[in-house]
Image (tube, rainbow, N blue to C red; front, side, top):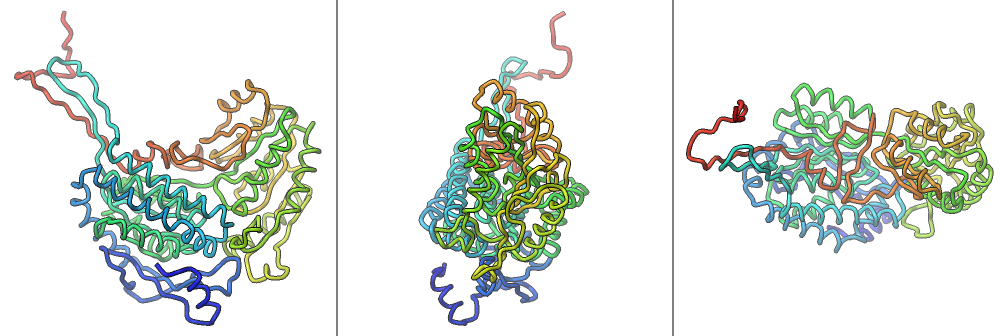
Length: 511
């Protein structure tokens, strides 16, 4: 692993960017065509991080074959031994945490404090899943017949195709790969093309931790070339994808034709409900962090505030004052609050929604790309707030994935619950209230996979299931012990030690 400062100094001196390779069958190799693409710093697009192999279907096929060949040996490795390798990997990430975080900020843009948290999530899930190597519960239950033993166990499925987004380029790959590996599956990993460096650094540490050759394989490149090949491969038994809902639907259609196991973590349109009895200062803290942290580029980001009219004025006053004070810039500067969007296309998308919003609500703050000074070299957008948005307006319904917040006034709790649930997504929601009865009603009635009380919509912990309802996904969960379900098949086992044939599933009752 080269030093980040060495790479940056070399780039500043005009030296060619470093070249990175694919990782297949335990070896770093060039792609079949030798074609490459560049990854650049979204805060300063003059800063080229490196050149990466533009993988093809042939490269993906070789990676799948390597994973297939490694599967019998990895499956036969005792699960506690697999867990020990996960522990070593987690320890290596902890040792390299600052370096990984800085590399992430340079490539993805999130501020350093968030990048450190991203790496820490990877560490946490590695340790959590390492423990599953000695646990991985099945069920032992009494049989309905005498002298008979009944139990269930988990077994791995085979080769897992792991396709990950750019917004959490360490945490999300770890969320997926750690449960896949500890349960005995092998992996073909395609990171997002905006963050191939983070994926490469992760796999370097996995190789150092001692995963056997072929157990973990890395293929960088585009979704059409590499991602589709992984999804279509008859030798890939399970797909785990996080990304845009439309892409997830196409993956589900293609994988469904082969009856593959598919886990999809897709879009969100998350809301914070603020009631008249709320602590408005606390609510302001939670909303700002959820809306503008990671520049709004989280599937759990708050993009809607559903507020009782009685407190809309004072809440909006607080939000506007605090948002105006947020500082934009490179996330490597620890005084910066909001980093860049991931690329110029994201700036265009957010700008398009802002223009739409001008006709739907009242623009309170922001509303334009930030291009002054050094920001002109990056993909920056001003924190933006719209007031007076209606629940069914497009900016109140569609996922923007940027620093745009819509304020939706309502009359009471019932109207707030209706507005919150009137979306095709259902990932995360929160409520600010001092009334315990109201809080419990929200926990019951919010149609989301995650509910926070007196906190923002972000901040999931690795030991609880992560995922959403409706078009946020297809019902599977990441993190927590529920993550094992994606990567395992259940096997029920019966042992009859009675010495004679006992017939089950007929009427054995005495008459």
